[in-house]
Image: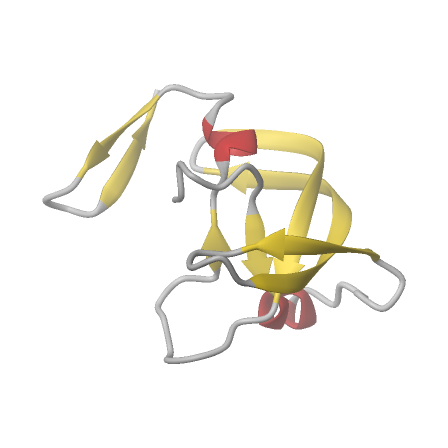
Amino acid sequence: MDTGASGTAIHTQVADQLYINLYKARKTQAGIVGGGVIEASIIKVDSLQIGPHIIENCNVAFIPHEGRAVNFDGLLGMDILGKFGYRIDLANQIIIWQ
């Protein structure tokens, strides 16, 4: 979850696991924390399930993951977070969707 991100992004390794071909994807530049820029591949996915919600025909940015290992596959941006009510349970590190 990243309330400062305008779009939702998923690591490119997930695209490989889902057999999504990124070679023909629309390419764009995405700004990252610290002022850097990375290349992202934009794919329109048929559907994306976030908690109890299903978003159909949405654009997702696939970005390379570099650096230390993390235990998440991407981030939810305001394009998704802005559509639904939710609250954050920080103690249990979960999003409670409304």
